Length: 485
Figure 1: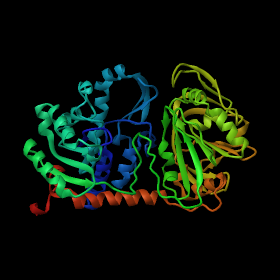
Figure 2 (figure 1 turned 180 degrees about the horizontal axis):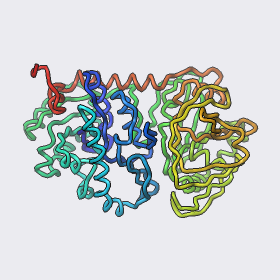
Figure 3 (figure 1 turned 90 degrees about the horizontal axis):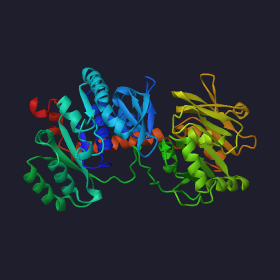
Figure 4 (figure 1 turned 180 degrees about the vertical axis):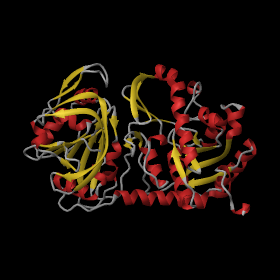
């Protein structure tokens, strides 16, 4: 199990790397995260949803995503509450106190999934959440040491040296664990190191002497590296060519699946700008309204920021507007939530740019889909994760014609506004090219985002072989080493 001294220490990345490295050795390995809190999710082969990071780890292991890989997914819909998803299906909305009491039930789901994976694969590579030293969350823990103790799992502790204070992070985390939990940590990994390793070596020697535990290796800081973020919005971009398309994405309080925009960040002809609270929307060729876990609340917040007027001005000057999932719903005339699924029940007036209305329903739509994009009749693939049911005349001018016969989304009569329920639409090279041309880029380059992701997974596995103690890693996985032969 990989645990971290902090959030974003590199747990997801290391698990991804280890999954691909073990796959290279001919080992059947599967990723597993007991509990994940994230608004970036993926649709699985068994029709549920899991954290996006586990879907990438599944790719690294050569597997299709399955709900057992992430049995508990928490999707925050307020500062104190979240939708609780068990084995891929939403079961309830709970505040933090109610969920804390519910953890005993959640642990049963976690252990059931782990047993199934353990019976089917040689190695279950587990990712923790946050830090194991969060004292307020120790009771009934199912994400870190509580799980590791329950299944008798060895732990690797990773820390990010780029944040500073790496030795304090490691020693402090270790000090806050119980004696049995301390014994469970079998080694340290230091992540994102830049510079001469010789200057770090005295600290590594001290750490091993102080704790009696080995440093399994030091991973370098990778330049031009990308994997989907688990939750935080990643604003890094690749180098741009002279011909660029300016794209603006408002960062809503409950923005979901912002990984939709990773292919645009990495595209050499797209200048992607995320706009946060208190900022004005700058001039752009394309504005994209993203997905949202709380559509009505986020739409009200968007209006409070003065962004509705900015969107109207953008359209008057000929700019293009794209809405994805919750962003599509905002484009319509009305959003109703009679059951109070995303907050207090009621309805809100939409932006009124497309003639349709949306009602949130208890049953969530979860599908991986394929079809043809309406604006250029090219292939497109993506996934649906939404509770809304939309209806109205605008939907007769569909944005996408799906292979299952359904129509998805809408295009305005003047062609300026387009909305779709499909996440991941920019990952299809032909669809991305067509959408960029629609938005105003004269000669878009075709970029294979899947190939870029695969390239970086391979780079991670190379780092494991070069910088980590692979013999010790095999021993921790209870696999034979060269010395055992």
